[in-house]
Length: 109
Ligand SMILES: [Zn+2]
Image 1 (cartoon, rainbow, N blue to C red):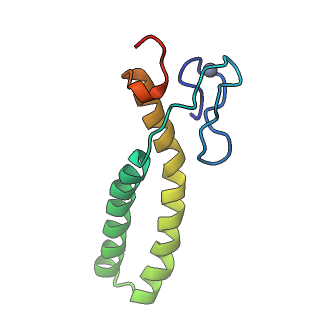
Image 2 (cartoon, rainbow, N blue to C red):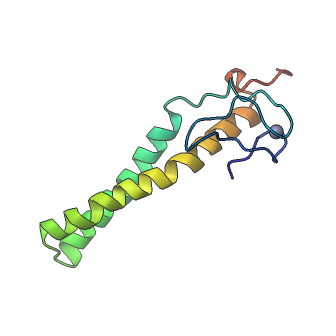
């Protein structure tokens, strides 16, 4: 949901994908929550599967010409990847928080 994992109120993101340094609502230190390349690999796996399947399916089941498949699925891939990145990053930051990963900046670990 893009909310602070500590209080659920403040915003997690500052900008599109950058995690805010501190929560505006509770002052929680979010700066050490770093999901690194984690979100990207999930987006690659999920979007890659969906897009490759969709492209092949439209080619073989509906006999789309190659130019139509490219014109439809390439922009679709960009949209789906951008759409998945932010929720996926939020999910991984929340998972770090929940499972007390040391990088997530909890003080009680
Ligand atoms: Zn907070």
